[in-house]
Length: 146
Image 1: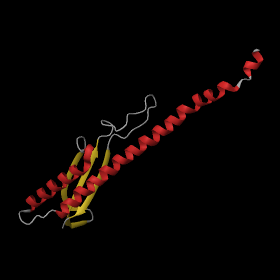
Image 2 (image 1 turned 135 degrees about the vertical axis):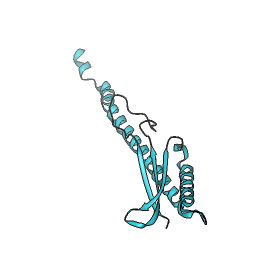
Image 3 (image 1 turned 90 degrees about the horizontal axis):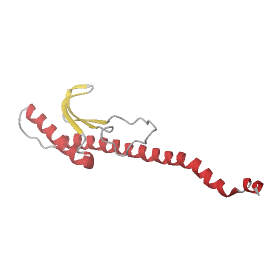
Image 4 (image 1 turned 180 degrees about the vertical axis):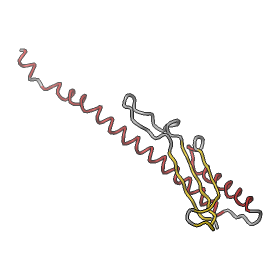
């Protein structure tokens, strides 16, 4: 009777599943985690571009250069914050007005959006794997206003 038990294949499928399941789950976790980080990056990029483009569309008719620059910064920050959605509580938005890269005679609005991903992850790190997650996700967008 003992010889017959060794050749019984009933437990083989359960054993194979037990060996393959952790690898499969790790691959699924990696795909979901990468997709969510990519989604956050997209939201940050979209927010920075929305803020910078809103500064172009701001109807600033009078005032000194400092007043105009302050208005550009205010409009850019408000629009970028509005487009961040659920990430706006933790994201840092830094609009700035300055000289354009490569064209010293032009004024540009640069919006930088930073999300501290390590401090506020969208999906928790897989325990025991020591996976490296980004400390922050940054996006910079620059537009010429004059």
